[in-house]
Image (cartoon, rainbow, N blue to C red; front, side):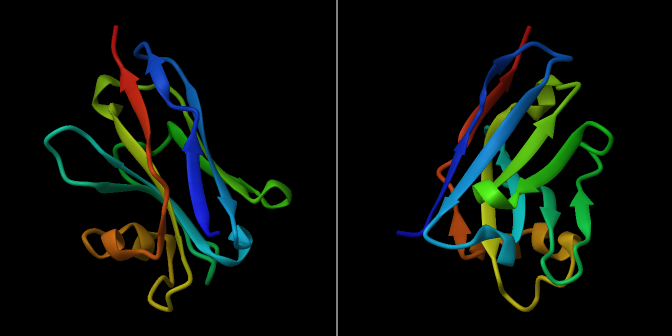
Length: 132
């Protein structure tokens, strides 16, 4: 059935790198707008990086610009988030999401909160902990 499954999280020291993967099954991910979100302890979920299938535009939160890169492998039906120069404030559960809703006209629109909370498909999340 329809699923998004994140993997690749773990414990890393500040300045380190991780690559998160989000594997889709039950649907073809390349026809969907896709994105990564995160939720830190005691904080609201926020949009990290999103790509709109409408115009192909990509959005990055200001806090991760220049450090994170979103990409996809259509053959593997998988989306990735390469995270470099990690900081303690990046510690969070990271979720991938996908949707085809018409209002997702740009990557920025998809990542906008709180509307993004109601995106159609969500993974279960993967924990990223950045600590010395």
